Image (cartoon, rainbow, N blue to C red):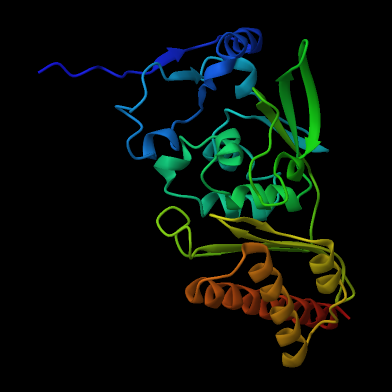
Length: 304
C-alpha cells in the first residue's frame, strides 16, 4: 500500500544574507528554525508530519551565530552557542546565578545541544534561562526584514509580550545575546519540579541584589512558570529592596503572601502543587537572605 512520504525540506544557509533570502522565498510557509533541534525533535508527531512540504532552516552553518566574545565589561554570545559552552567558557567571569541556572537545565548531554537562542525563542515554554538573563539586564540583537535587513538591539524582556509569549517581528532571527559583567553581593536560583515533564506544576525563582551594611540597595526578582511566562514587576523589586534584614517571620509572611498573589494573578490561577512549591521557594529565599546578612555581620565583627 502506498504511503505518501512527508519529509521536510531542509535549507542550510551559510551566512545571514543567505538566511534572509531563504526567509523571503518561503515567507508564506513560516519555516521552522533548527538550532540544536531539542524542541522540534521532542514535539510529538513532528516527523513524519501531517503536513507536506514543511520547510526547516538549519542555522548550524551560519558562522556569525557561533561567536563567543567576553571582555572586562560584557559577555556576548551568538544564538547558536550551546548553554554548556557558555558554562564551561564563562566559569571565571559570568555571574554565578547564570551558571547555576544553566547547570539546573537538563542533563549535560542535552545542555551540549541546547542553544542560547533556542532556549529563549522556544514556542512551547518559557525557560528559567530567559528569566535569569532578564534580571541580569541582558539584551538581544534581532535581525528582521522590512524593505531591507534590519539589525536592532532590544532589552531581552521586550521579545516577549505581557503574557510571556514570544513576540518577534515576522521572519526575525535572534542573533546575539549580551550581558554586562556585574558583581552582585547576593545571587539566588532555585527550581522546583521538572519544567519538561510537568510544566503545569513546575516553577523557578531567581534573584540578584546588592547589599549595603546589611540592607538591600538594589534587587531584581523573577518567578518563572514554564507554561505561562514570567512573574516580574517593579513592585516586587521595590518590596524586596525595602526589606530590613534580618527580617522577622511576620515580614517574611507578608512578602511571601504578596508575591504569591502576584503569581496567582499573572498565571490566572495556580495548581495546589505549584502554589506550594512557589511558597516554599519564596520562604527559602527569604531565609537564605537572612543567613547571608547575618554571616556577613559576623565576619565584619570578627575583623574588628
